[in-house]
Amino acid sequence: MGNPSTSILRHRDFRFFIAARFFMVLAFTIQATVVGLQIYDLTGSMLDLGLVGLVEAIPSIIVSFYAGHLADLKDRKSIILICLGFLFLCSASLLAFAGPLFFLLEKFGVYPILFVIFISGIARGFISPSIFSFVIQIVPREHYPHSAAWMGTVFQAGAVLGPGLAGILYGWAGIQAAYILDCVCIGLPFLLFLLIKRRPLPERNEKEPLFKSLAAGIKFVWNNEIMLGAMALDMFAVLFGGAVALIPVFAKDILHVGPEGVGLLRASQSIGALLMAFYLTRKPPLQKSGKLLLGSVIGFGLCMICFGISTLFWVSVAAIFLSGVFDSVSVVIRSTIMQTMTPEDMRGRVSAINKIFIGSSNEIGSFESGVTAEAFGPIVSVVLGGAITLLVVAIAAKKAPKLGSLELKEWL
Image 1 (cartoon, rainbow, N blue to C red):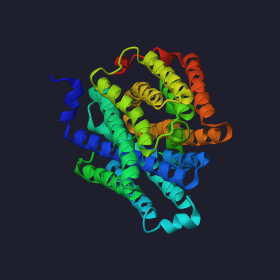
Image 2 (cartoon, helix red, strand yellow):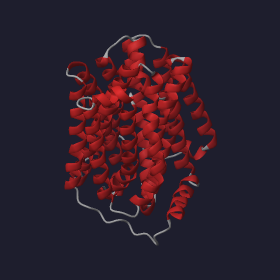
Image 3 (cartoon, rainbow, N blue to C red):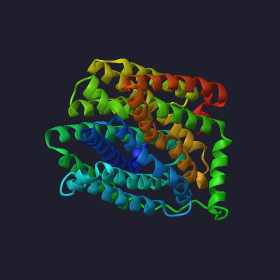
């Protein structure tokens, strides 16, 4: 027998899948970085930076439940390919706004950009449940912890390179070069998914009506203390503890660095997460998993407080780096919980609920950070968010004792 952490890579379709995932994340982080820089350059408004997250989160939340229902009924590969097609069109539109259609920004301000982000939010809301459900069909159950760690590794690898490439291209070659790279990176996953074999849908006892199907998914999560606790913990931690949306503000107004500094700050969190995720491919957190989850969120909150009060660039980079280390532990544990505890015929719906809890909290958290920063300043916004994160951990530990005593090895 080979090393379990690398033997999973012998699965051809899993290799294609994680490669596609890498380029998707690369595209998403490039786009997020460039749009943030572009909007702050155009308006100078911290609130507008937060609006970017909000207009992506709203449609994503609205469609997520139906997307999860659809992922349990329809061919998941087809859903993924259709969504990737729409995401490519969105990236191409942003490129056009930076070139021949720039006059639309002169006439309507940032609203054309926000409209495209809104459409991409719909596509990302539909693709997420199918992505989660499809990867579990590709790998055997005994490899779930390793697949979660590898998914985290390629996710963070893309997130490391994306902001750095975006910042460098934006600063040296211009905004159009950055958006061209975004288009290329979102086009490659489409080609890679074409190479992955289709998987039959799991059997369901009956084709439930939409609302009955959604209610079954909600009831399952609500009655699972460990799963609900993990989702709620991460949702509130990300909602209040994230400072990524305000990095352009801290870089320009507090740390006094340019686009390259923005790229490094955004990448540093992912570098920390990448290193930890790679370590977890070899040493998955199967023992004392619940305590590690709670401890990692505490560490994340403390890092946010440190970042908020720092006026030194390299101290800020270190704080963001360590926040990525702690966040990676949390992500791998939560992902393994989702994979091991979810019934096969309910993966799409549970993934949709997880998307609403976790994925959308990133975007809503960006809006919350923007609003709080506009009202009280960026430093208060980030420090207060970190303090609330610590409070959330204390509440989760008390309200969900089974989460704190979780041992993932018992579920494999």
